[in-house]
Image 1 (cartoon, rainbow, N blue to C red):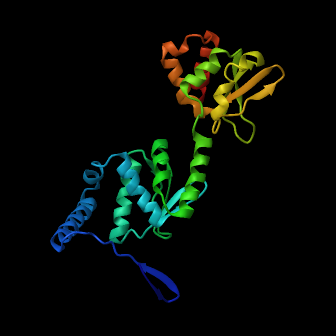
Image 2: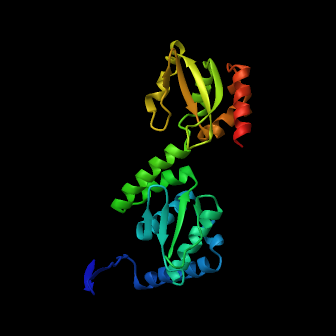
Image 3: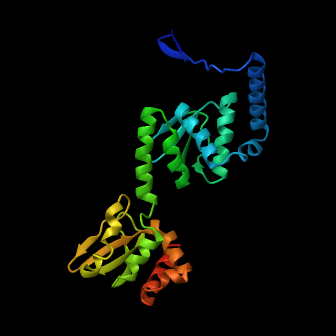
Length: 256
């Protein structure tokens, strides 16, 4: 690594040593140029050959090099008129069109593009592949915030256990300024000991609220997918009171 100083700015020149013959190196260089041309002409045909891990590694490299990570968003800076910028733009488009990220339009004036991660397993993989120290740290915070806002925290089996011993459930509203609906589950204290183990891994689970002799658990729209699965699987519904199943169905109907 060679460092030089130009106009008070530090630049780094990195050389990668490949233990190949000059002929083999030229062949690798030629293949790289062909892939770049193909990516510019038809990015889908190139990127569709990659699996999720490979796409994630490619995306992580972009973030490591040109990314900025905030509390609830990620951005990438690039000049779209350059060859590098065109490649980054096409990769982001592909990830957006295939549901991995939700990207905004490119802003020419600021030369950047904002996006959020819309695929949880993709985000989980991404955490392991971003190596830049400060970006890695910020991505962990982004992941934590994402999980709190979008991940239910309960598995379908855990919800089945809770609902099978629930005394009652009802639909309520969240405290202002939020206006979304919430499904409140009431469990008698004496029965709650049967499901207390569920909170041993409680990183993203809502805390049980003690209300006199009952325990109150609030399920938000984050759990709508898991609750929908319960309504679809008859074997899971066994042991859950019909009136509770009816309340879940009403809740899911009202939030859609």
